[in-house]
Every structure is written in structure tokens, then in C-alpha cells.
Amino acid sequence: MNHDTAFRAFRIHDDGGRHRAGIEHMRVNALTAGEVLVKVAYSSVNYKDALAGTGKGKILRRYPLNGGIDVAGYVAASSDPAFREGDAVLCTGSGLSETRDGGYAEYARLDARWTIPLPAGLSLREAMILGTAGFTAALSLYRMQQNGQTPEQGPIVVTGASGGVGMLAIDLLTRAGYEVHAITGKLEQFDALIGLGAKQCIARTDLHWGQRPLEAARWAGAIDNVGGEMLAGLTRVIQPYGNIASCGNASGIALATTVMPFIIRGVSLLGIASAGTARAIRDDIWRHLADDWKPAHLDTIATREATLDELPEVFATMTAGGSRGRTLVRPG
Image (cartoon, rainbow, N blue to C red; front, side):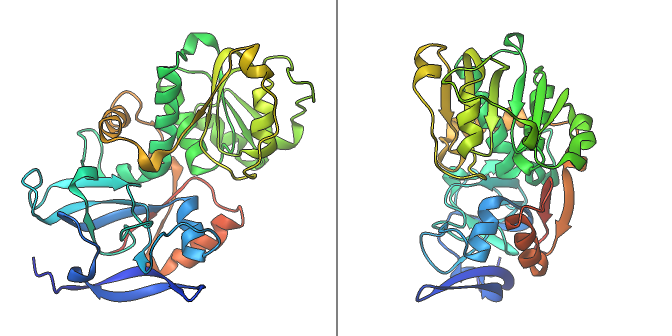
């Protein structure tokens, strides 16, 4: 591998506080340091990527960097003996597009500690349909089950259900044996969500939580992508000893609730921080995603494939709330 090789990348700059991003040509030896050089086959678009790519969110901790918090491809060169040229690998989070160059490029250089060999049972394309969104959904279930959640307790409700995390969570929970209910503001997506396994769909505008500290319990647990008033409402309607996995803030970061659900019903609020997940847990979750938790409708959930040049349009749609499912990125 010639480390002077030139390639295309979607690179993000901060010019004295002014955001700038677009396609650039760079060379392999200019990438952030790492033991594993990967020829990128796929990346994906997460809400965090859209915030970083548009400058609407403070995601990058250093500049400039290539965007993309997910990457999957083939090893082009490695100084770590655990990886050989041609190996199929993936990486999600782990500093990508925060402190090191991410997956929106034809090449990425990865830290061997966070480079995952592609599990048997997944293709590179499937791994990136999952990406951080699927990993987040799976980590939510993993944490819930660690805390005692079982299918026998009753249905799990998923909020923000028509987004990437939401759709993958519905599919994944169904595979794992749970009854799933879906909450979304997009009524036109009801049929699609039922097709993924949701037994009941609820319009966000039809929710009437009540304002008492505890209301009638409706669900055994929840995976919440929304935050704000949605998360506050959920705390009041989860059954005793149920779990709420909090993994998103599409509706805001504030949380106005009381201690009553926690000290009377024993409800647990679990924080889901996928980017910093320990390696041993990452390996366990990717084994589940390739096997017993593998969503059955990945091709349905992947609603679009985009090139590097199309990323600004994808970001604009996502930040305006118009995206559905998962968008793959093919840098080559």
C-alpha cells in the first residue's frame, strides 16, 4: 500500500468559528494515526453525522476531520498482527469524526483496539445498515436485559420509531421475542412499522400522558430516542421494575419528572452512550447483531444509498426531520 495514495474525503473544517465542509482530495499519510488502514466500502448517516456535517452541532473535538462515525471495509495495511490485508472489518463511534478521521472517505485509519472483525452472519453492507443506529438499539436491549427485562413482562414501546434507531429497535426487539409498540409523528409510516414487527402504532399527537407523578402503567419498558416531554411522560407510565433506555434527544435535552416512578414503581432509567462502549461489550453486541438479534428487514430499513457528493442534501433532509430509516454511504 502506497501511503502517498490520493483519495476523496468529505472533510469538515472550523475556520475561526466558521463551519466549512465538502469534498477534498487528501493522502493516506495525512489521516489521523492508527494501526489499521481500511479501504472503505460503506459508511452510514446518523443524526450525529448530520449535525457535524452541517455545523448545527458541536460534535468534532478537533479540526479538520473527515466526517462519518461509522465505517466498514477491507484492511489495506496493518501494523497490528491481529489484522491482515483483505480482512473485512467495521468500527462505530470510538472517536470517529470526533477526535479522528471518520468513514466519509475512500480510506480510513483505525485504532486496532476498536476495530471489529466482521462477524460471521453479516455482510459489510448489513453492518453499515446497522451501524451506530443498530448498535445503539442493541445496546439498549443489552442494558435492559442486564437489568432484568424479559419478554414475559409485557410490551416494549419505541419512540421516534420511524428513524434509524427506532426502526432497527422494532425489528431487533421482535427478533429477540418482545412485543413491540411504536410511537411516531409520521402517520404515513404506520404500515411500514407494522411490517417490521410493531404490534401497535401510536401517533405522537394522540398521546395523553396525564400530569400526575404516576399514571396508569401501559408498557413494561421503553427505548426512547426523543427525550424531553416524551421521556418525562414515559417515566409515569412504565410498569413496576421496567426499564427505560434513553438513547436520543430529538425533542430536547430537558427532563422534567419526579422521583416517584423510581422509588414507588422501581422503574430504571438507563443511559445509552454507544460511542464509549467498552470493547468486550462491543464484541458481545456485534455477536448478537449477527445472530439471534439480527433484524430481519435490513433491506427495507435501508431506504437510500448516497455518494460523498450527496451528503449535504442527506444532512439537510435529516436535520429538517424528513428522513426515514437508514442511509448508506458508498465513498468509492
